[in-house]
Image (cartoon, rainbow, N blue to C red; front, side):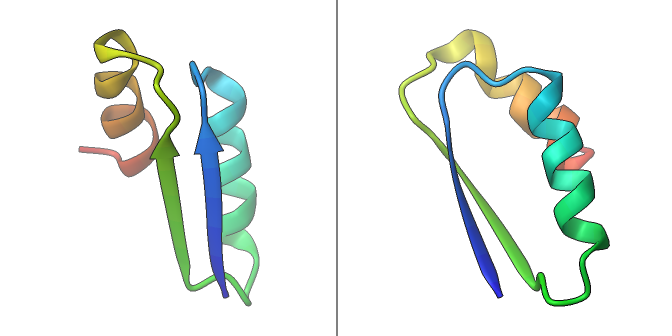
Length: 52
């Protein structure tokens, strides 16, 4: 199952949501779309969610 998450100014709740989704056996892919948050949130999304 592909999960599409539109994300505007993400915070810690996004990381928690992704963790919960990854634990679900039917979730194969998670796509997070930056909904215009600006450059201040780009690094948060990459480091916090993807784990780079």
